[in-house]
Image (cartoon, rainbow, N blue to C red; front, side, top):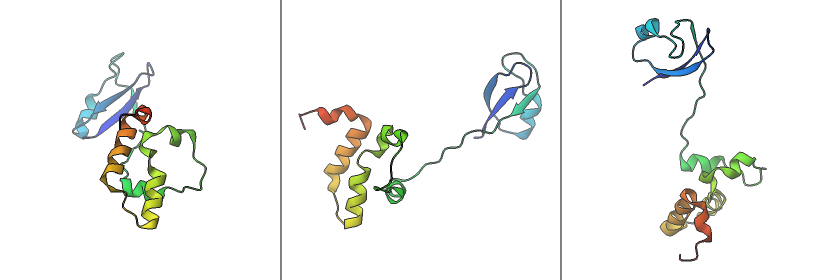
Length: 113
């Protein structure tokens, strides 16, 4: 379902609205001040990238940004890239450990495993 972002030209309030039919935009009002003087904003776009696409696009020799390092989805990416290059299957236990670290990075310090 398309969710559009709008800005009120009277009070500058920004809000999102689910629009099912184009005609619904004709009756759209600002939830803050009630005016119909609105402009549609260009929204940020996100897309899903598969694990294989992430591995293929990862360059281990490139300098990584702070945001890359803070993204827990990147845990294990280097090992998976090298294993793929060498044709090695790291096995299900490796994937399970990586998934555990991605959801709870502090578990790396857990000695019970």
